Length: 326
Image (cartoon, rainbow, N blue to C red; front, side, top):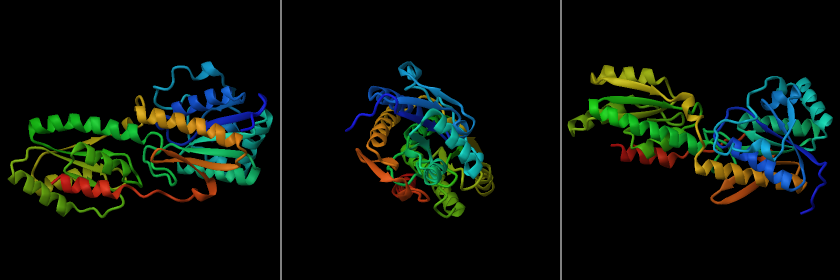
């Protein structure tokens, strides 16, 4: 591989919802890039930071002690201005000011769409890395943050199960997933939940109530129902259960708890290998790329092959969770 001179500048952006493991990817880009004699700029607050010239040069010490931290040291956000041509023009001027020849952009679907439009309109080379706790990005088996999110949720449900057993209660636990059941189905399976609702499948309160009644008849004391936020309000489901069973039902909404906290080892490793690979892809001369993982292999695709597509949620997890939760 041809080495670029030290004056070859690249920028790194984290955009959209934060995901645990983003810092591992930032660290890998900075340290691997510096090892290859690149000039690395950190762009703060997502695409808006590119518009507003929130740019800092990054050194080895800039990423010390961050691999175990959740969130993103560059901060993140969603920029409506960037999706207007006037906003992109400002972002392009910032790139020209610093001589930035390529961007490594970490985020989800909206972030990827923005990167694709920016490349098409202004020719800036871009490499996108998948980061989404929903794990709904096409072209990768796993996105940065997913493993941490499901582990955080499972840990919470393990604790809930103990108190549910003590008081013989039903708990409805709402997890993230506005459009995808990836988190809910995996969490339900891993936690031994009795039922799960996901956006991709028809809601069936009647079946749930039947299961609850059968469980009580078998002497079962506690029940945990997992609900993806995109299905319905957990409180509505809890009220339905109480009306039809007269059993006390409590609600736990995990919300943004799933985004925070130290990333798991898997997310630290995934962020690290994706970040280092992104540097190599930029240096290879690729103009517009997306890097995902399938099994243990990193897969590089053209960004245009990924934009506008979503991955299928793990339906086999959903089906197995329902079978094992009886």
